[in-house]
Image 1 (tube, rainbow, N blue to C red):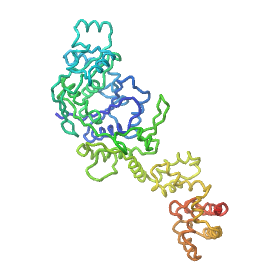
Image 2 (cartoon, rainbow, N blue to C red; image 1 turned 180 degrees about the horizontal axis):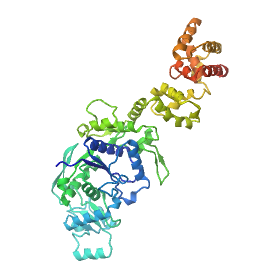
Image 3 (tube, rainbow, N blue to C red; image 1 turned 135 degrees about the vertical axis):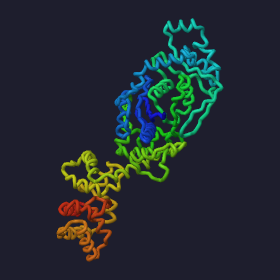
Image 4 (cartoon, helix red, strand yellow; image 1 turned 135 degrees about the horizontal axis):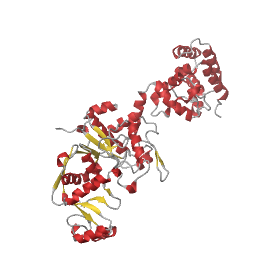
Length: 510
């Protein structure tokens, strides 16, 4: 009987969730949903020395913001818990004992100084079948000596006993069969008595088995450890329930070689974390996609296409559509360059899909942050204003620069535009324009435009100079949407007032 698909995302709470980890979580989620399976969030906190307060909450909040829904986890609960490794000590102890009793593992009492001396004495030293009998462990020491050390409370580790000369094959769904010889593997530490916790290698195997994980989807940096995990499954007698492996390619720097790092984001000015992170130790603040103005659906769409494609050139896809199309058949084996400019493009595209009313509500906090009270304007006015300029923005915060003039009259005038478009006769022409505008019965864009353009033509004025001077007085610069759409929204009284202020304030350059 085919097992139900169950995947797990298993981050360590040692700091903020990197955007590469987010992509791994996303691919797990898409695969699970595509195949009617479950998504598990397991917190791997066995490295007590690197634990960072707040990191676990940050992980949960990040996934929730992005819409990656967890079926089982610390917060959600489930039948296979606990879902935090530090709460599973008894489970790991019993499984360590299973390996020791079966002769698949052994106790090692070597001190850090003894291990360092061995490394110094033997180039490329590896704790394995060729060296273990010269070290202080339960295979090399007399049984009574081992017992004495245990009774004295000597610190020890449990090492996995790997026999050399065997080809170990990992069945990777993305890369195909990957085979290495066991002679290159060392006797990995599985458990440390000092903190009564297992290492990653033991804990994740035990948890994956007991939680009935069917597919392990993780970064390619874990590929070298996969043969060890195959051997552990076999040592426990679990070969028949071994999960399928998928080792995803790395996210690469936008420029140069190597994997994407926080330094790349700092250097080039883009976030590498989903949410803003406040380091509890240093106090340093790292930018996040949410706080930088990205929409979660844009981030998801962007990340999904870093290493995967739907089989054609389609780019804009909702989460539901991604789930429908996702398959490892279209995943790349090579790393994907992190094109952060493309990420901005996705955000732009998703913002264009927002209604003007939605954008208006999103824009209100930006108005307030710039000292403009949103309550002073009707919602319909704000919506019409943002609707005129939204095609020009990548982020909601960009709206202020593009639409500011709808809410605040110009306080200064672009010097280059003044030099090019303002002349000694322009105050007189603008005064004439005021009278033309006052005489309009209908101030709509459709009605006002032909009247004003007709007046310019009848007077023989230079169209470009007059219209740009008109825009300069109303907007403060020679940029923006269609001029008569602007004046329709501002209304006749405000438009005329601004033109008059421009006449009074703009001075010819000396």
